[in-house]
Image (cartoon, rainbow, N blue to C red; front, side, top):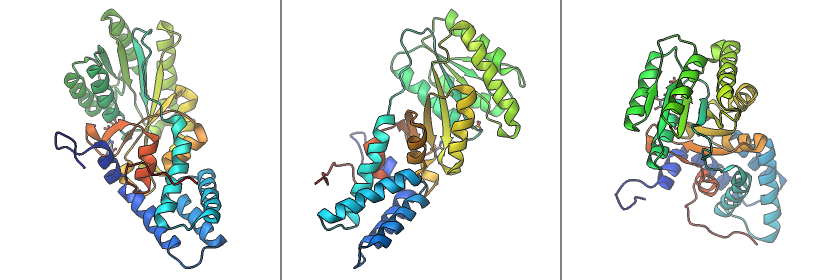
Length: 319
Ligand SMILES: Nc1nc2c(ncn2[C@@H]2O[C@H](COP(=O)(O)OP(=O)(O)OP(=O)(O)O)[C@@H](O)[C@H]2O)c(=O)[nH]1
């Protein structure tokens, strides 16, 4: 699928990106529902398959129950079961598919980006900068991971691309001091948006969490509502660890929304469903590749259908 410019549409990127997960689910479901006999064991096996794809127990049970109900009404084959799975997943995800809209009243609005190293924070910030620049906003980017020169350099490149003002300090500088200077600069420049990158060294968890708390405290001195969004970037390949990260970062940074990257690197892309089910936090963007075009706003229906390898066209399997 390509668009008018000949580049791949987002849905086909999403489907290709989720192929590891959707191949596993499709194969499993097709095997199960082409068997002669459909009994309680079939449903148990379906539930196991969904759990293996990391959808979590609650979602797996609900989906299996929906399939169980449907079988009384009609003949089920692999495709109709996949459609039921998609429908149930979309139901769970629809309430959390919320765009990230920085408040217009705050000047600057502050987005704090948190997450463990390598989860995709820099890529996410690049995408945010590009998105809001296109919307006409004046942006300041702050390199809050002051220990990693490479992270600072990468962010500088994004800032330049997005025409954003870039704030960094010497290696090892206090991240909260940097946040302070960045806010002051953003205010002086009458910027619309300040996006702050942070460190993600889980090896020193206590230190990291204290650093984040301090950044939040400093920002609140300027504006009690700041940060207006605390985005947690989660790497889907870490599987169930994602749940623990929501807890840990939620406590110190008051996470307000999620970005899930690297859904292309795992057969367990269902983790997004488990996280949504458990925490009900908004999911703003998802990523299925390294490029900036591989990270897009989250859409529940598209994700749910791509997860089980179905085309985007809506089909009504309700009865
Ligand atoms: N396959 C894949 N790779 C991704 C995705 N998102 C980010 N990456 C890659 O993952 C690596 C880490 O991404 P960064 O954006 O640098 O992550 P970070 O959290 O800023 O990492 P640090 O700078 O190490 O703290 C890079 O090589 C990215 O290109 C994705 O959705 N899929």
